[in-house]
Length: 290
Image 1 (cartoon, rainbow, N blue to C red):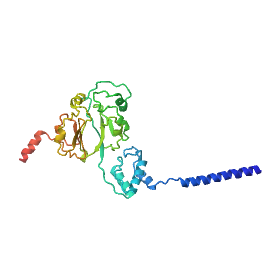
Image 2 (cartoon, rainbow, N blue to C red; image 1 turned 30 degrees about the vertical axis):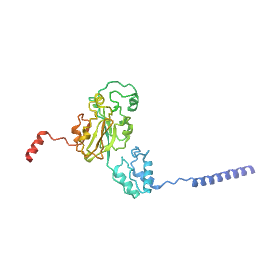
Image 3 (cartoon, helix red, strand yellow; image 1 turned 180 degrees about the vertical axis):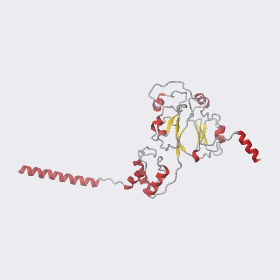
């Protein structure tokens, strides 16, 4: 009987000591989590797409709360939720936030099947990453779209699909959230996030080929040949030439489209603009005004 009593006392003592140690440790090493993080996380869309630059919405919520404590959450943006969600977050945290202009993914390649015919047959793993690792791909252009659809697989919002006729990815502006998943998935960097623009109107160089003019033109009929005509024509200094390639700065571009008219290879695309009036109609309008 004494042995049983002793055993009970010993075990009870061990349990009591262990409980005290656990209690002390829980207090000493407790990690405080600001309750606002959970509140902000509930407001965020929960897509966990990584478009904000963080691993998920939880990381974004934590960054927003820390930013609020430091006095500003500018520079932090949820591309999926957009201005509505960020407005709710700002109200929740008692902060003001600058309205960022919406962006959309743009495919900067005009190497359709017609413009850039195949010269080889790839028989390996059918992904852009694998094909790019093996070389130029199935065409002579080592810069353009590989057409395997890594961007399509990366998009969680069904906003990008391959066009079976052109072989190029096309972005659905209404579904695109500018999360950036497709830009990260493309091994050749032909997909860029650009300002959506007023009424969805944008002007951009649909080419990333950095070869010299003759080489680029041989690889693709619609490649930028680096002639520099667009740069000279732009009255706003929005176009720069680097590595035989023109690039349009969307922050400076005023959508005048003069560059589109002078490009000899039609490598500059103007999106969502009204169709130009027929020459006859323009003449009639001028005569009527006269």
